[in-house]
Image 1: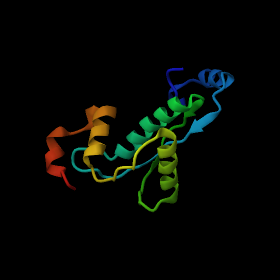
Image 2: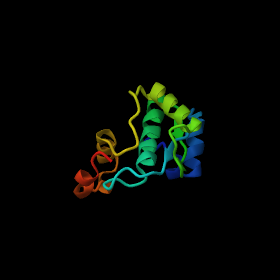
Image 3: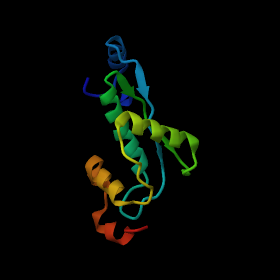
Length: 128
């Protein structure tokens, strides 16, 4: 199955996937927060969308639920921390990156959604 996000599938597609053994659901979570002048507020949610698909592909028996977009983010949010930890274990990720428009976040956005990166504003927001 090429599309794993249930929001892009029809009900019969989902029923067929379940009949073929899809038994796991991935629930991506992403904060909505600023990431400098050159990136949209959706950076964390966009990362979560993509990571959810990568985890589902790796598991092989999973579909991806619509990303839950958290409106107020705090590094101490237990649910988000638990999700990041689980995603790191399943996907084999290194330490997560911070929420301050660092080079890693900008690079990921250039790979995932290059059309939303405002390169003309990148230098002005470096280090913020």
